[in-house]
Image 1: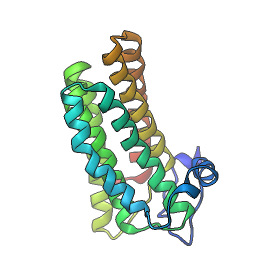
Image 2 (image 1 turned 45 degrees about the horizontal axis):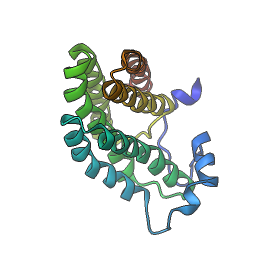
Image 3 (image 1 turned 135 degrees about the vertical axis):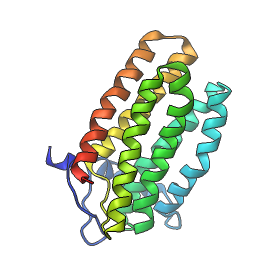
Length: 200
């Protein structure tokens, strides 16, 4: 479980590839032009968030679901691209998790409160707030820490969980709602692990 709680700041000199990095390095990354940088994908995710919110709010699921999945996938891709091509930047280390929290937080504030339960939404927002607070306090001490394994698992579970909720709404399928809710609850556990591993 050490990879889940690793507390380091990864640089281009100390880069370590994860399993998904090796898969993407042999499949998708070679197709991405060299002029596209990891930070471009992070900025794209920021740009997509208002559109995800808009189509989600008006329940335009044929657009909202693939748009949300694409935004979530950019989180995997920008990190892998940065590690594989050794293009890690301090800005990206800070902005990448910020974009994730805005994406999931907006869904929590609107959809989860309205369709699932306000306590689940509050739990997600509260733990994410603590993670942001922890990052801010570390920054004040001049410390920077790259996202660890538990944070990556948390984001994956959140994206899959929210997608299940969206599909459950689209197809009126209670079992998808139950699966999505369960995954989001489990993601809270990984969020706490991530927070504890960083420390305040």
